[in-house]
Image (cartoon, rainbow over all chains, first blue to last red):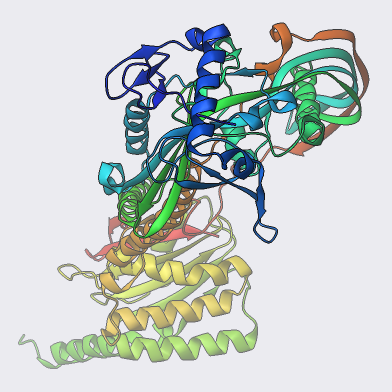
Length: 361
Length: 279
C-alpha cells in the first residue's frame, strides 16, 4: 500500500516540517501533528486513502506488488502515484520517495511493516534552508576551497533521506597483555646514560557498549556514514510513518546479523582503546596479547536523517553529506590550484627570508 | 784635500748591485726548512717554483717551516723570520709563507716598504688560506706550498685576479662575498620550496580528512570496569653515548684564525700585514 498524507483542509500533500515538527500543508498552511495521525484517526485516514487509491487506480495493488528485475542491477517496483496516477518506478528497498511527475511524497507501507518496520527514528532537526546555509558556511572554512564553490547556483540538488541503521549493544570481556617501557637519563662524566625500565602489563576488563550504529544501506558508503556520527540518541522517537513524508527513505539492504561482523571489529577496536587508557605512565606500550570476547546483547533497526548535497564544480560532481540532526558535514572539497599556489608562494617566501636571516646571523 | 768622486761612484754601483741582486744570492730562493720537513726533491721543486714566481711578481718570496716558535705567536715568528732571514731587503716588498708546527698554524705575511700599498687584500688572503687548508689538513705540505705560490702569482699579476664577486668567501663560516650570499639565498629558497610543498600537500589532505568518533562515545555510562590490573617490573637495560664536546679545529668554519691582517711597522719603516689559520 502506498501512503500519501493529504491535507484535510485543501487535499494537497502534506510533508513533515523539521522545524515545526509537524506535518504541514505548503498550500493552505494546515498543520497536523504526527501524534494526531496515530490511533484511530491515523487508521481512518489511511483507510480512506486506501479506498480512494483503489477507487482511482484499481490496478495499483497489483502493480505495487510486482517486482521488475532489470537484469541483475536490483529489484525494481512499478506503481502508480496516488496523487496524479503517473507510473512510478522505484527500487524495491525504497520506503519513501517522490512522484517524478507531480512531486507528491509517497510512502511504501509494505517496506515499513512487519519485520521491516523500524523500532525508532530520529526525525530531521535541520530544515532544508538551514542545511543549505550550514553547508555554505562550511565550504568557506577550507583553506584551499575555491571561492566560487559557495555560490548557490552551483548547488545542483539537496535531498533529505532517512538512512537505515542497525544499533548494537555489546557486552565485552577482554584480557590484554602488553610490554611497557619507562626511560630515565643520567649524565656521568663524558657519558650520557639512558636507562630503560621494562614492564609486563596485564589488564582484565568488562566493557559495555550501547547503540553502536552501522548503516544498513548499500547506497550510502560506510566510511561516510561513520564520519557523520555521533547521532544524539535523546532525539530517538518511536517510529511513525508520517515522519517520512517529504523525504526519501530506504529500508535496510543488510540484516542485523549480516552487519555484525563489521560492528564487532569496531567493538574490538573500542575495547582496546579503553584498555590503553588504563596503561598510563609509560613511554611506549605495545600490546602483545589480546583475548576479546564480545557478546551482542541487543540489536535495533532505526532510521537516521541525512542531507545529501550534489555539487557541480568545473564539470566535476561532488557529493556532501550532512547529519540531519547535528549538522555535522562530511565531504571532499575541491581544491583551488590558485589558492594552493598562493599559499605555496607565501610560505616559500617567508621560510626563505627566515632561513637566510638565520644563516647570516 | 779634494775628495775624489770615484768613491761615490763605487758606493752607488754597490748600492744598485745590491738592489739588483736583491733577488739573488743569499735572498734567492728562500726555502728555510727549520722543521726538516722537505725531502730533497721537494725542496728543489719549491725552489724552482719560488724562483719563477719571484720573477713574475717582482717581490721576494720565502717559505719557512719551524717546529719551535721559541715562545712566539705564529704572527710574531713570521715577522721575526722575515727580518732574520732577510726576506726582500731594504725597500723591497716580500711575502713569507710560514708553516708553524709548534703553534699548528700556517701564515701568510706580506711586507711593503713605506708608502707602498699592500697587494694582497684581506679577502684574497683568506681565499688563499681557504685553498691551502685541505692540503695542510691532509699533511700534504709541499702541495700546500705550491697552492700558495700559484695563488700568490695569481693575485700579484692580475692575470686571473680574483674579483670579490667571483669568489665564495667564508669567514668563520659566514659568507662575506656576494657569490657566497647568493648561494645562501639559493639554498634557503630550495629548502623553503621543498618544505612548503610538503606542508601544502599535508594541509590539502587534512582539509578533507574526517575521522569517526572515538569508542568512548558509545560506552555505557561512559565508563568501563577494570577487573584486574597488573604492572610488573621485569628488568632495566642501559645504553651510554659519549657527549660530543666542541674542540677547536682548523678550517674555514671552525677554529681560530685571524683575518683582516695585522700591521706592524717593519724595521725599515715598512709594514707587515698577514693572516693565518690553524691546521
